[in-house]
Amino acid sequence: MHPKALLDACAELVKLTLKFDHPADAVVSRYFRDHRSLGPRERTTLAETVYAVLRRKLLFDHLAPSGSGPKERRLAILGFARYQDEEARRAGASAEHGPRDFLKSALTEQEKNWLDQCDTIDPGDLLERHRHNLPDWLAQPLKEQLGGEFWALAESLNQPAPLDLRVNTLTDKREDVLRELKLAGIAARPTPYSPWGLRVDGKPAINKLDAFARGAIEVQDEGSQLLALLLDAKRGEMVVDFCAGAGGKTLAIGATMRNTGRLYAFDTSAHRLDALKPRLARSKLSNVHPAAIAHERDERIKRLAGKIDRVIVDAPCSGLGTLRRNPDLKWRQSMQSVQEMAAKQAAILASAARLLKPGGRLVYATCSVLPQENEEIAAAFGAAQPQFQALPVGDILAQLKVEGGASLCSAGEGGQQYLRLWPHRHATDGFFAAAWTRT
Image (cartoon, rainbow, N blue to C red; front, side, top):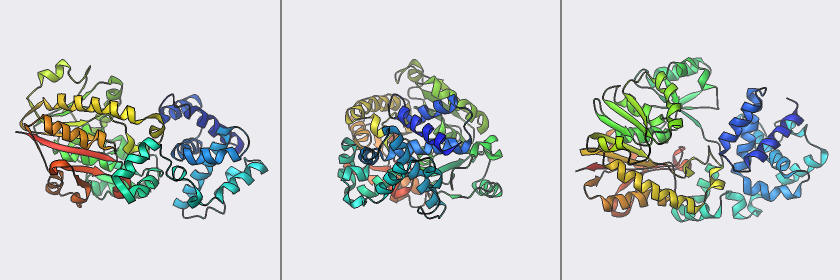
């Protein structure tokens, strides 16, 4: 595609995304379906330009008025330039020579001069909000939690996430898959914490590999893998993934059960569960039973009360731990929506707890970084449910031989130990988990 046409397409997609009518990934996917002639490189440029704009929206909104032309074009120019600079850094090239030539060939002289002027701005001269690019309602509680670490987190959230894979240990060994990827020209290395994970350099087309087609690998963030590991499901047990979604953790749990027992994958969205079906077929698992439920008090849940060995509740949440992948979330939510979500999380956790038999394990998890959805929910549950005894997450990870497991944990009120993963500390998405056993 000609550079000018590609930049026009970027501006069009930026405009559509910034309406915030739908999640950014859905808007991008719809645009690609409507423009099937786009090639892989063009799709990558379009998507990464949009995500660069979403990550640094406050900064780009600050810079855009000094330019000319439609605002979405100015934002697209800044996002396109940021994406090309990041690609150059990853390739070890200099940002001053070459990487922007493609973009600049689509610009007027006035636009080139404006972009050059934007580059001369010293970040130290910017307001804090233009440096961290977080809404005030989110920035303040993160500062209160992290203190001096806040800026490291803010910077990490403005970077693209790495590509993590989970090896299906039911059928393959991590070392064998690592060699297979190397033969395919894909650089990867074991993840530092998850014994099932591989971290891949770049963003190769994983779905075109034989390892993917035969179910040896699935795309899954290392933090998500650790949540499934924490449940520690055993052979022959009755297990429930209470909010299964598209089933990433379900598949990991099924493999730890060695395809024995019975694993229920519940979700209120039949559409999300439909996305599990092809993954389930690849995985070679036959112990997984997906089921759409109407709500957390569904009759199916009542029939299983007191019969289940292990339950994981990866609760619906703000998703703010995934801002590297879903930067639009910070602009589409508010503290009010977080508080509304917390009420739902508490209700779901209480209903899921009824499933456990004495001695059973309950894991509550989110991909949020806010205490309102994490420690506060866990503390309230513990206070209201004396028959559930808190488990030290660090000890569980040590028993599972997770290296550096203690560094993944934090202590809450009353000394309860939680899993707390941060992008800037652990290179995972932001995750939280608490665990209990029913006495």
